[in-house]
Length: 354
Ligand SMILES: NC(=O)c1ccc[n+]([C@@H]2O[C@H](COP(=O)([O-])OP(=O)(O)OC[C@H]3O[C@@H](n4cnc5c(N)ncnc54)[C@H](O)[C@@H]3O)[C@@H](O)[C@H]2O)c1
Ligand SMILES: [Zn+2]
Image 1: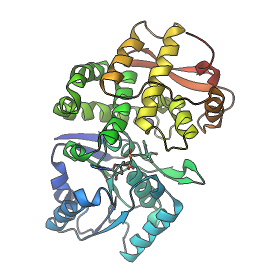
Image 2: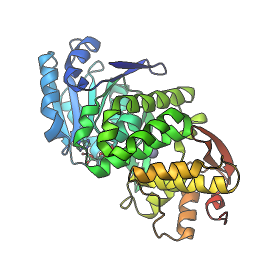
Image 3: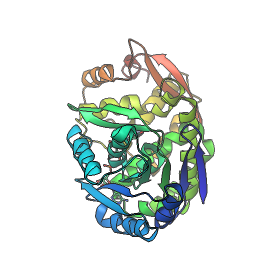
């Protein structure tokens, strides 16, 4: 088992195939004589809720569960209120852990509830999507959406424990699998050339080829996320490198009202386009874009911009809450495995460079 300590939160990420079955025993050690609340969605519940409740029960932890309808709509104040009601009904105290069993949606919603219920109760993440295992469950960002704007209400609150079990990824749909792969390629690009090579080697053998190397793949992504977050817990500086590919991705997603491309596909297009332009402008080592483009293609990730007018993309970029003042802090690659922040403007994407 890999145990990765998150010093910023004194929490821990436990990564191992099959660790899901040991959640009860491990929680009983961390939270003796506690009861647990499990929050999940109605896609994940039929797959994993009973075995989770069983491991808790075997370890002597009484638990109750609350199931939300799957989808982004659960990240709402209405669902947060419903969740508080559930915690109150079950008389959850300050020492009782709240367990998020699901993808980033359940993780973000449950995280915000755990951060605020009784001014903070222990949060345990059991991420079940690739995106949540390498990204959303780590780093302490919690949020709900508000009036059509994503993640507008939230706080930073670190989990006490994250259980990362690669076996749970076997049930993901191909689209959800690709959604997480976009972030995996991002980590390789910005800071891990060996991970990039591993992906290049495994990608031609498809999802099974990647699953054969999944422990290493997850470990390297998680290590990197923890390393970056711990230098900038509240996201005011270096953490912005995790936004490689995201400036264009967020604009694309907004233009499609978050109903078109998945986040990972949008990030893939963002990384591809940003690197093609930065290389054309002499800011990126020659050949970097070709390698990146080849990897994204062999992972069956999207690289072509959908037909959206440039003016719509431009105004979406100007609305982005991370775009402060006139300067756009854009993450570009110097080469595979090394990135830097370029102070530019949204016109970077629209001035002809090629
Ligand atoms: N907090 C952060 O730092 C952070 C980072 C990235 C993304 N996010 C947030 O995460 C959310 C997206 O997360 P997501 O992509 O995991 O989406 P999600 O939670 O909606 O899960 C995607 C779908 O997969 C299903 N699912 C989950 N696990 C499964 C499994 N093992 N087998 C089969 N189906 C499964 C879910 O029920 C859902 O239908 C967004 O709201 C985003 O804002 C947060
Ligand atoms: Zn992302």
